[in-house]
Structures are given as structure tokens and as C-alpha cells.
Image (cartoon, rainbow, N blue to C red; front, side, top):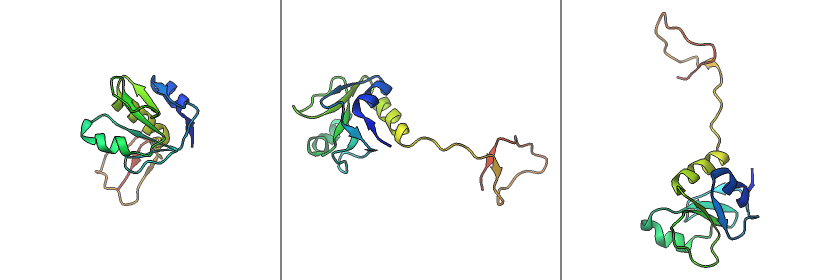
Length: 119
């Protein structure tokens, strides 16, 4: 699954500074990101990692100072934008209505037929 940086910005209410057509394929930590990855920076403790990252784009807050030439997705809440983008790449698994064979269920318990009971 790939999204353009412009698409991601639109989905999270942010704005792109740099190449909005950049195709993003993964969310990765600053130190592991490559040219088609998006990463996240919101804590000055990681300023060195931010400066050295090879990420194609980085999610930052509105007031964050950024080196010229760095492609960023600016958002009012960088944390919230990161969470929403992460969910796009890693959507929650839909529950499967079933009861695992090793699940322990109290006698007399009522279980909705749409429930997923794991062991």
C-alpha cells in the first residue's frame, strides 16, 4: 500500500512542505527510514536522528524548525497525525466471530455471536 504525501496530508489535515507527490510506502523510525518512508519527529531529544534521517518525509508540528530542502508533513498535532498515518498503513484487524478451542468461559456465560473469544 502506497500513498502520496499530499494524500496523507489531506487525510490528517496537515500540509506538505516539499514534494507532495512523493510516494510513501511505510512508517519507520527516524534512524531506520529510507527515501520512500515517512517518519515522525516531535521531541528535541531526537534532534540528531532527525538531522541524520534518510526518510523521504517526516511528520512535524507547526512550529518545528526544519533544515532547508527537507520534505515534511506539518500538522497541528504531530502525534495525532502520526497515529492516523500509522493506522492507514497498519489498519486494525477485523474481529472474527469465533470462540477459540482453548478459551476458558464461565458456565452459564452468554456470549454474543459476533464476539471473538481468544485463549
